[in-house]
Length: 337
Picture 1 (cartoon, rainbow, N blue to C red):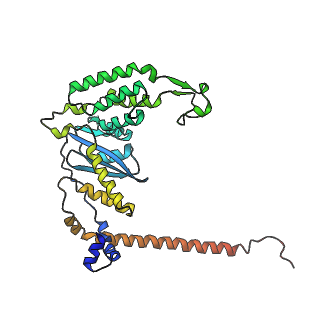
Picture 2 (picture 1 turned 135 degrees about the horizontal axis):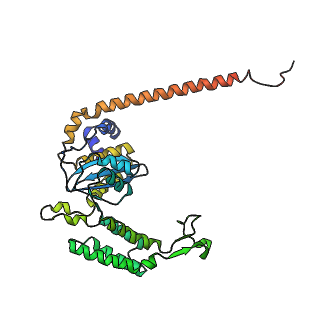
Picture 3 (picture 1 turned 120 degrees about the vertical axis):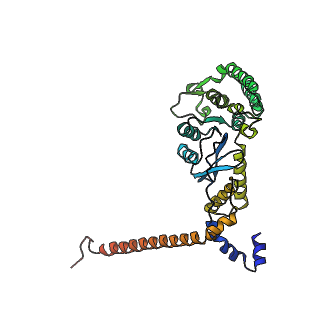
């Protein structure tokens, strides 16, 4: 596309790219905070490479806030949640930092765990075709988890899950002791000072990944909403946030040569275009002088930093020369007669 546009404009591709460079300095505004209390807000984080993590908060229709960080933790989720009004319910994938931030900053908010993530976690641990009876029983229940639409179905599902849990409790709690196996048979996750471990760790972890949110009451809170009055508020997953993450990652795959700063700016514009009452990007660009002012400030700042670096190198150079010359007068030994 850039080649065609350059040919139509009568300039080279590099010239056109250089003229477009300043447009990267046009920043999208933050979403407008109307003060409205939403029924449900979905929060989730996704990683781009090894250094960038993007936290997003949205309702069923619009993006409400976003936050760049290095990793998902309590502090960064607190920064994200600080940009929105506490809703009635928050859906999360169960990240420990997100749960801690909600418990600290929004203790009155109802928490709903993403059922899709729970099902995916079970499949990851016991596989699609478990070899054990305990795994098969859990996988069967996990497949039905996303199809629960009434409180009665949820109660029946919980009864069946607890029955399976207690049925296999003894087997799940079986232990293996280090002195019972050869050294090469010790799993890699076992610490060097650990004397025993659970024999069926993956299956046990799969059951606990369901039991923990069930005990906390985080599995079926979405059923408390009346679907007839508010059909959009009955979500039980963070799929709407995941769809935005997929769009951003698709852009990054199609534009692999972009710098990290450009990738972040493109992601911010994509999120802004999904906010409520977003302005025309051309109007925003005109208000910011099409990025020219920010571009010139960045260039001036870059020159200042380069000048400071050059001065430091010059001072270091003279210091090194002085030390070399001074070394003549501190030499030791017999110099002759």
